[in-house]
Image (tube, rainbow, N blue to C red; front, side, top):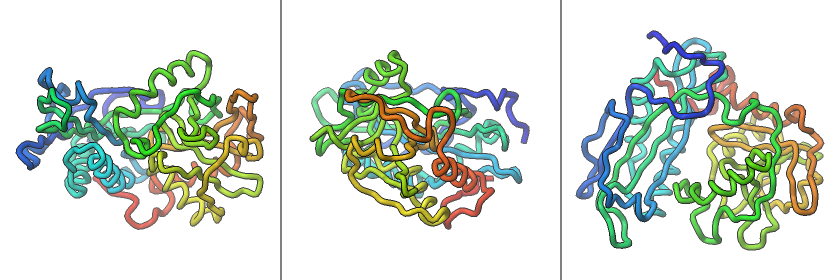
Length: 341
């Protein structure tokens, strides 16, 4: 199979239309017209519920080329389960787990020429999305839905690769108490766009959001979970009902505990505690793990001892181990790797 003629080592993180995508329609209580399509355009009525009441959700995962030339993906069943939980909260129909995983596999297989070669540092980003596509003018769930999976080759999410990032504590809330922060709904990201662009204009890579009730505990950033390493090399993981349950974060927790022998502590983390930590990092599908060097607060700058020049020791081991598992260079826990071809 001949790969596409791309500059694989210098890809950005952006949309590139590929050859095939998966599509299914939900009508009259059943999923119909399921299969691969070539048209990158969606044709929707002006009255589609997604335009008026933001009934939409999405997922993100990746496929990789291994050293021996196979194409694999990482824990697609977890993305299927998370999308099911999101759909339940948004009164959208569930796309069954088995169908979801099969659709991921078929879409990646059909676009095998777009999967970056091993050793380039790039991957194939997989974007499942579901929208309320049927007409709905009264405030109510849509009468019909569209599920689609499309893929694109991508490089690093943050410019500069794994160079430590500079964050700021946002004045805005990411989620409301008892709201939708724990699901991957499009509406959560819409409200984060203005604070994110404001942060970028001021020279920051991301916003760090605090808990919406007291604004004293760390939650996550606009597009990733956050983890810490304390002075005793314990992995400290913020815990909250309004944090999105990142699959990468859950995988890093397992890697830290079972591969690196770290003590993992999941608990509420006060903003002021960060001054006593030695490392901080963002984690998610897009970035995998990106180190944090500084966090700017109204009370001053929290400078992590790991600094702004390189990734911290424990963060580096976590990242190297997880990416090694994803590339099949390190043996994975059972069920984590799904071979596609």
